[in-house]
Length: 155
Image (cartoon, rainbow, N blue to C red; front, side, top):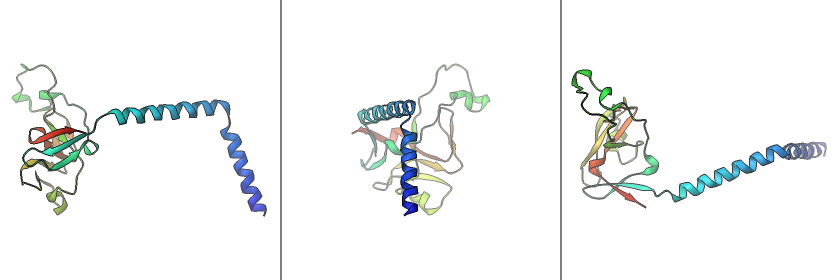
């Protein structure tokens, strides 16, 4: 019986600690902010990526790995730069997490082409050591899908 009283005494101490006026206001404002971000995330349409040839679903927005833009041409070999182009190039590919449909990944390869399961169309490449995006950023490990070989659909 003493242990039950001790436990109930501890809960009342915890409840009284939670009832500090400044903390409750902070907790309420934090809850409001999280509710607002939930609403904003629901408003954002989800992207689905499909193989351009057979329309099989390949990836969704949740599986995309974002990367910071590199410096563009300056990130590549200095002998090949001309300096004529100004501005940041658009990324022509997306990087995703490894997925079950990627057979070479499942087979244990370190680097290989990624092909669609439905039609065997080459969608991109992967390399566990990483690879450089056309914007100049390095992504490690890299599971790269070329945007020109995918169709984007908003849900």
